[in-house]
Image (cartoon, rainbow, N blue to C red; front, side, top):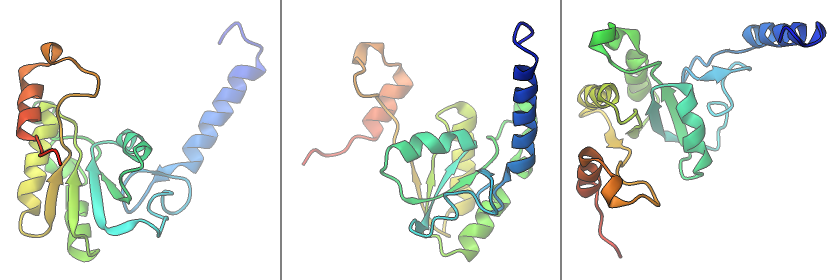
Length: 167
C-alpha cells in the first residue's frame, strides 16, 4: 500500500468508512443489512415457517448457493465455548426462542459447524427448542469425491448414522 499512489490507500480508507456507516446488524436474523432488514429477511417469497440457525453470517452464502433452502436464517453470533467464556447469554439464543414462539415457525434447521463447540451449541439449541418446534440438523458425512481411506472415524461414523435408503 505504501508504494501505491496516495489516492489508492485514501480510496480504500473512504470505502471502509462508508461500509462501516452503511452496514448494520439485521434486527430479525442478526446477519448484515444495508436497509432496515437484510435482503433475505426482506424477501417475502421465502418460507416463513422455516428457520436455519448458523453461527456466523458467513455461513449463509454457502447454504444459499445450493438453491435447496428457501427459508429464513438466524445468526447466533458464535458458538458456545466455556473455555473461551462464551455462554448462551452471549449468543442470540433468546431472540431465536422468541422468534419460534411468536413468528409461526414450524421447523428449525440447526446448521452449526461440525466442531466440538458447534455440536455443543446444537445440543443446547435442541434442548431449548424441544416441544416447541420440529428440530432438524444438517446431515454430515463424506464429501462427494472423497475416498473412504482418507476419512476420519468421526466423519465415517456420522455418515453411517445419517445413511438413507436408496430408492
